[in-house]
Length: 364
Image 1 (cartoon, rainbow, N blue to C red):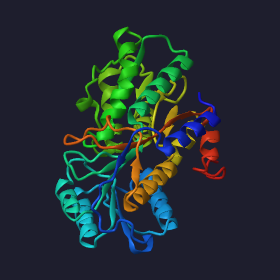
Image 2 (cartoon, rainbow, N blue to C red):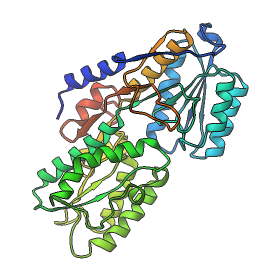
Image 3 (cartoon, rainbow, N blue to C red):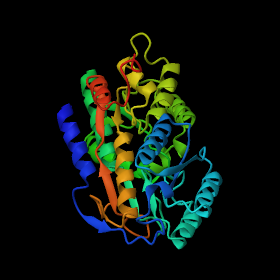
């Protein structure tokens, strides 16, 4: 478990952009203009997740505080809607596009139009793939997110006192979200040795990413799969842990488990991980149901993105801290990585309150 001061120091280091830098080279006609004359287009994927609502609110507020106008749009998980929104931003000559995609490969046409018009594009927390039109990427260390989830799962299993081998099931995120692969690969770096040495048993045998992936991060899909796993593989044994990559999926998984009698009587709920520290899941962790989450302070992600926009439009060198990890199939996209934090019942209140992510009243 990390000390809060260490967490703050690492987050501050990430935001400084220490590491390699790259010049923008942007041809944007908005460069070096008065911020009040520039509208920044912000394309968010959905309002069905608390996390994306917060992202939109944070980046809009920080852009407006910096003097920019903001065109914030949500696409409700509909790809054609997001394409239309981007095309409208281009037509209206928004100065920069910040894009959190629904499908990282589905926006190539609109992005090519943005590039042709000299509009810089920043991929926001989801990599835009198969295009040379994306200039920069702001995100968290996604491989580390997966490692933290797996480490938390193992810690929870150890603390549970259940005998080994531990019965564990694996869930991954949406296959059209590049982050989901990083999360899963990071987790498997930690879990695969434990599977190989027999400490962990995947009773279903389902360990391939394509098999365990959850399209659109849909909680209902995760709930149904968990129900099927319980029927197929756990008629005469208990599941001890579940690798869940996102809080929404975690809640669907927990609903399936509770429906099968877990958490009642002497049948303990398994150790279930998560991500994003969504308020409902934070309360679940405090209540001893969901075991953990990975907190990604999206206030800091918004701040890093706004700084990047200011550097781009000011024709300054854009400072990044990773130029190798994020290959989108066409180019390696210069990236600003921030640090995630693992939270569980022992530290979650302090971490979130110190970050001013929630108030004490919200956590009651």
